[in-house]
Image (cartoon, rainbow, N blue to C red; front, side, top):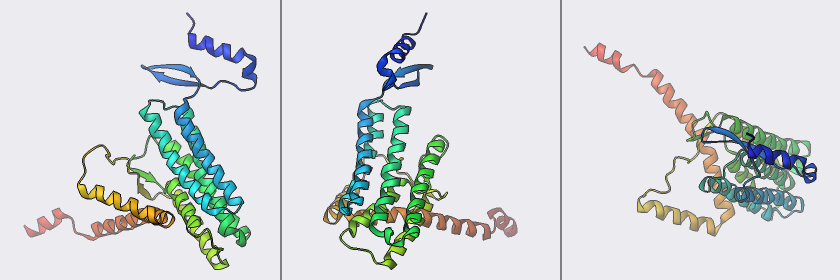
Length: 283
């Protein structure tokens, strides 16, 4: 007996319209069986498309010299990117197509867009050095996303291996946004090139960053936690560009600082005599 899904699949392939826009067919596992499903989920992919548009808008705004809107567009892409996965999980509409589409959107919004916006604002005076720094950031973002996609099932979900691309993009976007009405000097452009390169290299490093995925937002918390959240919200509202920059830089430094403290603890543990040896000598 033929599978109805297989028959529908063949009908779509033979239809003339399929020669122009082919139907997406995806193999999924339901009740322990692998079956083929046609089409894509609309709602989560709309959020992904909106995030992709925000990244594209940031690139166009940077090319036109509208750097404030370019920086804000990258942050808008981050907000939308945070929604698509959650919406997919809440509505049980996760799919392999959505995962790949989200990754490509991230590459544009958090790899290409911040690199080009930073280049247009502060790296262009450096010539080849400027576009080399921007390309390093862009390439490292692509490598970071590829590594994440291939290791997502084997790494500890409590941590990111390397700086994630959204906070890396946030540093560049917030920097441009904060000083969008100024023209960087040549010396400042050199510092920006170094910063862009270092942030790019942090994305492909093995330094661990907390992912906050273990944070329980449904449980009860002390009242002071809510008060702190309100205070942060107020501070961000007063000066969003610089406060978001401060938060992104703090997160960026948290990984290397934790790594250094881990090395110091390891060295201290190696120098300290074993507890059992101390006990034997005391006896």
